[in-house]
Length: 406
Ligand SMILES: [Fe+2]
Ligand SMILES: [Fe+2]
Ligand SMILES: [Fe+2]
Image (cartoon, rainbow, N blue to C red; front, side):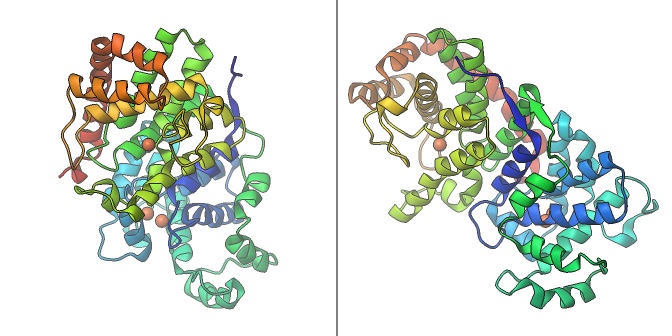
């Protein structure tokens, strides 16, 4: 029996914010550092607590609308790139997430320069958006290869002075590799907890972020979650376990945020090096979810989907004794869904081919025989439900991300 879910909201936010900047040293910690600067600005301006929290959330996820690593890097370097699309997508993603919806307008306007506002700066949302604008600008000017206090004077001259006795602390905190833990223990969300419904709504936002990176995977996590959900009901799991499975299905490929689209969308065989990069994704899924605390069960169900009972999976190479029923279901659901979908190098497969592959994987003891049989016995029903859910997801994708559909 799995326990009820309650997690520390601050840790949850920080860990998911980290996930956006994963795996590329040029952008590492950009969101979290921008949030720290915005938070300092908000405190210096004596903003009310609720507005500070709202600003902090917006800043932690301000570039959430930039879907690929390539787009994020261009934004940081402000190459020839129009920043509006990521602001619009970010606003749409925030609007559809109840705990974040109040911050949607701030995300929408975080690249709007000072001279393009008619409303006075004292108005809420305007101040917040400008705080992020400034914080983002400052964060991008920091040279990560240089010692921070050697740059601080220069940076101060370039941007508005953040004066006060604590100024050296500010720069040191900002560049510290321990900023995560500083914000966790001293940030605006120290003792706030969130429950399953709110966790689920943020997971839904991330499900879109993960899937909408590429049109090939645009409905993948929706499909995996639905397939795993039906299998777990057929298997007779408890209500609590079924909830965990749905959440894990939405987040199982979370680590794909760290994989460049050039690899995800390659229409040819992957090289050994490219496959090694792909293999990192479940490691990151595990690491982001596990560092939140209280989500260890979900982390395993989500991150073991490429592990195999005979130990031939990746990246942890755990075997049957470490893979519980929920994780076994996730592995079967992931393969089934992937086989039905088009990939850049092949078309989605038909029932006969899928059956053959799943049977051979269960015969070699890579996948759980009982679960594969359950899927094969209910093939039509599961396929129909998965397709229905994926259709809804495809519509969401086309509405919110029409600008990137090629
Ligand atoms: Fe941005
Ligand atoms: Fe940014
Ligand atoms: Fe995966």
